[in-house]
Image (tube, rainbow, N blue to C red; front, side):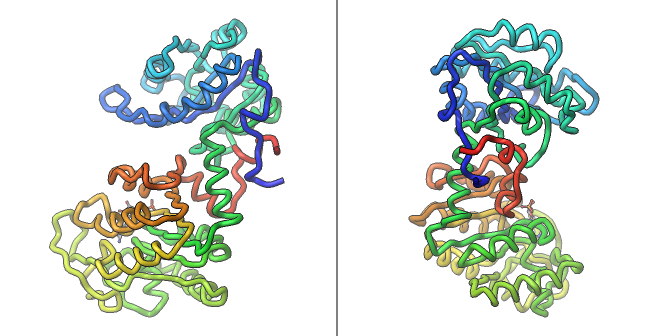
Length: 396
Ligand code: AMP
């Protein structure tokens, strides 16, 4: 029984059944219009499979963070309209989540029809995993399908609680996350390289700890690297550096050494005098950062070093930018890593969040094996933690 070996929609008879699918329709809006429908588009294979196989499909998701019950601006109305357009059939929208209207519409739903419930977070019990609310969700359907990886690290009613009452399987999105990331973590093709960046060591200690046991090469960039430099006794100037994590970083360096894991840190950095997009910048060696300067990106020699390491690997997992990539002048290191991943002939996985956005922005989506759809969830996954939204699914 593994976290990774879960039943999918293909392992269960859905014909004539009402199937409740937890999707991730938490899409961005600009002036009230959906500005990126990727999450809705990527949910289609699971929905279409269910429709084709004779299920009546009840969809649900959260959208934004409504705090006090129903709020028009967090309504699923625009999502229903977009789904209708993409599926080419009417998507019925319930006026509530598990209230009178949802119950009546779910009861009347026929095979081949699609009902979308209102924003699950309109129910205050949702994020508290309230057992009564979970039972109400379950009463709407015969089968539960989770296809929302982005919320799989949360034990909410619609992500986990409902599975206590119904047969529970994964949709195609979660299946792919489990297949690709699960394989990389349990039986990776080697060498296995992990590239970690982002602002803080503290957010990623668990991930580094866990990957030191699995990877052959660990590459550290981004703001995190400066805490490691401090652990090595180097001056870091005014760079982001977590004093209280220096001992932890020392421990991680020791652990990598003891396990024979190659730990790669930057050898040069792009530094500035201030944290600003137009700040004058220059490249310095990583062991010679001036006292009045801060590191904003990895330098060109480091980009080459990291790219060369990536090119030696057969499995590569990346989470976190190499620098302050939101400012174009400090995005080169992040771009170089994305480029190296796109070029290498290996299983390449980008673990959500900023690195996924960077890869997409560069147009590398088709050149990577997998871009995880969940930021927090994929970090917890890499950490080896059990995700409630996956643990609750039936084992194969
Ligand atoms: P995370 O959410 O932990 O992946 O961190 C992403 C953030 O880290 C981005 O907003 C980056 O701007 C930031 N970051 C990366 N490198 C640095 C750096 N050298 N100094 C400050 N922030 C950084």
